[in-house]
Length: 446
Ligand code: HEC
Ligand code: HEC
Image 1 (cartoon, protein in one colour):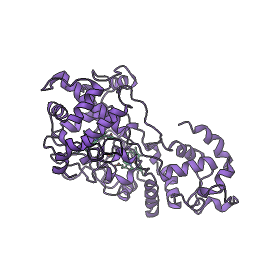
Image 2 (cartoon, protein in one colour):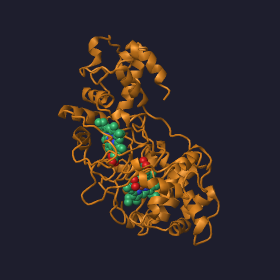
Image 3 (cartoon, rainbow, N blue to C red):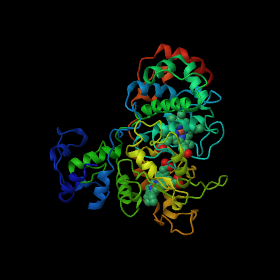
């Protein structure tokens, strides 16, 4: 991502290009320290050229890419409406479940459960919404190809929020603040009951507002990113010993070393999101009480038939890049049981792990990669995607230390808190909003 250059220059030199900026560490240039061999710290790690390239590509992603399928993707008013909708239990059949019930800001926008719990227990682990706008395919199986196209899924899913499209539209019509905001952005709501094409178009707009909100849920730099920045400036890997205030330990540096070399994690967990965005069948055994999940193989036909796809009638750019890509998809038998490589940013906040929440902790996940214990062969024609890594216990904890450095700064507080209490995307409470929903909030403490 644009840093390849810097790296090629920097790596062979292995010395500071900007010595003054580096010598003082976080304490600034006022206290320059001589550069000595011990500046390397105690990790003993030296990254090779290929690893250095991988690490450089893993730096903070910045703002999400533009979405030409959603004309309000970066519209502030749409984001404010989406913020209200995201926290609104009135969109569910029983008036008790909002998006935020499962995507709880206090739990990294997940629920802490192995399997999600809506109107009924679900069959998949809840993914975080943090930084999701960077992905190309959404949900574990990539069943949706845009954030806005994803939103109607939970609203109408019988085990999640269980509403019909018409009911969801009626909720917007009956809530004065939502209705006013919706009509200001998208024009008049269709007559009730909103069914057929008009209902679908309204649900697509609701999704576009929610997506505009989700695009604001970007995390800031993590300890790892700060370390990468420092390292780019200095041209040599450093750990906590060399730059005291930085929260990147020698153990994390050893973990990064394994991650980008013998651990082979980098084969799939690459780039700023630590995800190739593609689908792989790792063969983690399904939970005892659930059958194996077909993953990507089953989702491709569903996506191609969805009116909410990027190439569909509700998209602002059906012939755009994403639209063309969707039309060209073909379900391949080897995608049976394949899931999207998860984004590993903020992964320490989003336990349990894997599509059925098979692993409770990061230690368990890395142990799985180490032993492949309990893994199943998904397709007798194919070799396994993974090989046993046989990590030592110290190596497992080093990799976990590294994964824990990927937690970024929380998005702006105004966007994270419940807008029905404080106003959408602003710190001053909005009296109108508080009034119109205080009854719901009182009945449904989250
Ligand atoms: C009952 C719990 C539940 C509710 C309610 C819920 N979600 Fe989710 N969400 C999940 C689960 C589980 C997944 C993964 C689904 C899958 O792979 O099939 C998910 C996935 C997502 C993703 C995909 C993230 C990614 O990286 O691909 C987004 C975005 C999202 N939800 C947004 C929403 C929005 C918006 C709402 C409200 C309209 C909502 N969710 C309501 C549980 C929930
Ligand atoms: C062949 C591609 C591939 C390789 C190699 C790989 N991963 Fe993964 N990773 C995935 C996929 C796909 C999943 C989701 C699997 C599932 O749900 O069944 C995953 C899940 C994870 C998760 C859980 C994330 C979550 O939100 O649930 C972590 C942590 C993780 N991998 C870390 C690693 C580490 C550490 C390594 C190296 C030891 C590694 N991965 C190697 C593709 C890969």
